[in-house]
Length: 592
Image 1 (cartoon, rainbow, N blue to C red):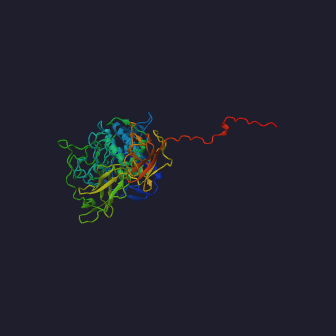
Image 2: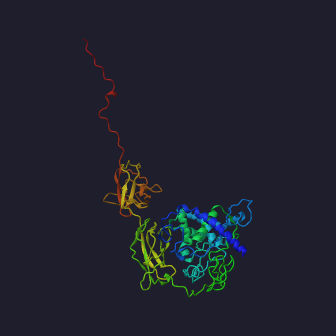
Image 3: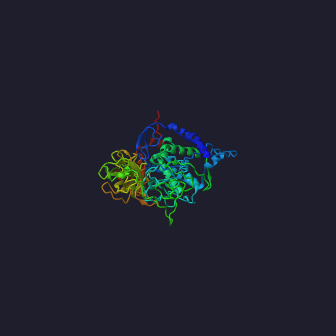
């Protein structure tokens, strides 16, 4: 007991020194203002310095599941060779700084992917390492297979409301083996409802497995980078971490490890990493002794003996035949109904037509109302909006799924939709998180980029001699409602006349890749500023005036005149210079 008490005293000192230093380094930019949380809600004041009281467990990545509270040592993570070996000295720092090889590789690959996909996020791999340390002790010290899958599943306790958040089953046990309540899964501890939309394939095997460190690390990176957060900004960094687990202690613990890993780390063999000892739920449930890492915890009331409900490092026990162990089937009788339990149906809350041009933001936002069977509004219910269909349209932040909590009137308003480049119809499905109720489907359409005006940018006449080439290129600019119309498709045709818009068979022409004459071009697109320079024009031996007609989606047209004429030859000089003539015959002067 004395040794345990002494270790907790040292841990308390580390908390004061390390966490305070990490937080102080970010405090300069914590000015009050309006913030938007991970569900798009606006809050006034410094909402990043404390958890959001309105956020329930299933609004976070982990469901606010328990986490490891061990803190990094006060010593440098890169000690000198002469450093001592006592606890809290350089040798301990070197051990704690080591990250198993496969786990470290997964963090760095996730950072590289996010640097390409979302460069404005500025995600450091050390943040993934800090969260991985706090969530699972770096996948239980790197106990993973060669492809990054944990040797045995890592499950958090079932979120049954008994000391934890209440999150009833959302995946029919597909990820956590529990068809009654959800449990956080894998080395980055995603709850099933979050993994369902945040999951990624990080190792290229065609699967999205929360038990795989490559998949889980990439998913965590995307989760932390949503809503255009810039993690180099302290405020955004705090908001992102709190969205992962809504706890100030969690925030400070992650920041402590982040600063520790930023000072240096090194690769160690898989399976040789140190395991954390303390958890945030130590002593939460009366009469239950917290388990040591790697052991099976005692069963809690209402659980089946052998069910790993209280310790993250403990793998699930396979049932006969290789399947996951059976979860409890009866919720505690004392569990009160949640707002989600009272929802009888979802209704459209007056959403208008959803149509937008490719690359533009939809002007209308989807609104859904949660009601009881009697038609009464239900507040504080999580509504998940999911984009389905063959489309690259996303919500703000680049995700295809968004979860929003209903307000006092029972209405949840989805984030704005941003149309991609793929045109056509798709749908957005609204559903209640944690309930198997019929949802509401909203039809949406993305139309082709368009322009309503097309003008030539130059004024110089476009002329050419027969058999020659036009020296002046044709340059145009497209606009839509006065704004530059970027990436708009433009077709160019050399027409017979203003009245006959069929393709001409003589006169100016373009050349294809083989150098053959063509008089119609398609697939041309304006640049981001709406500008387009056409390929070089050539002329055959036919002289005359010809017309080039340009058209765009949206109805913009432009006709450009082209002239093919022989070069002018100098005309004879009617009044030659007399000084160039031979000297005239001298005139004789009469004698006097």
